[in-house]
Length: 416
Image (cartoon, rainbow, N blue to C red; front, side):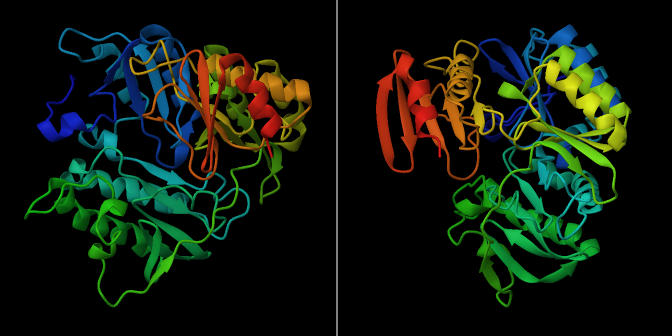
């Protein structure tokens, strides 16, 4: 298999997949979609093995609960090695190659395991299956995002194009852009309704009939009301709650679950192997969260202490007091050609400054290397733009510029 041909419009849509990688300064970047963040332990093992053979060795976690590989060598035609594609296919990441870039489905990470009004796991699978069966929906923009919130409001703050919010164990309201719309639906009807709305959005992405080409529902002149029957009720989406907690949790069925934070969102080969081993002690699956974490469900309570200790020894974070909580970063220089400054060392120095000051992490901080602001988290956060010798710190409407060596202490001291 090779990279799919692209139109002029698709060339401007830089969201990478496997068959159409993004070419960065350090090699190709591949993104593997995980609807709802769910994957089998064996699938993570396969991706980690592929990362060691074909990429830089790490498996990265994204802000949509997907996986990435960086530093991948490519053929002269820009395609990745056939062996890498074969391994990705064998691991189950490309059920429909034509749709690989549009399978962007974020779901409440703990749904069906702990809390929430509804279990949206079946709805996530149904939406993915119906999306892949519709040939025309392969033309959705790569950034297009479905967000399914199970009523706990943990992902309701994400900038969804379409989605649902649960209002009862078996009922949801549709979400279009920033609105909850229409009548209350049974779960079984929600996937078809979302597919119909996505189909209605397609003409706007092509800019036909004199309309401006758009990428997201929120870019429509009426914020998405154009897709709705005039009789439908339209309400604001509810306020967002916080991300999934970190540490040892008790599932609704009495079994245990470990919620692990991955510093810098990059799993080394050893960390990936430890997560795979832990998952095989439980339900055999893992859930990648949009907050650069991993859930390990279905563990016996007697297992949790030993497993948590081994994961912590690998450099993974399992404490709610971790100074890494809330710290994220784009790739930055020199790995990204757009980067004006590095980001990973700066993010690490913020965590170390928090630790030294005895300040637990919580306030969201995102470090970027250029004004493209890749990977920025939803909701309120402080942004650090590393310009090289100086760092621009933005929070709300306030902007200050400080020397690079002072930035970590300024941010750690201002956490709230």
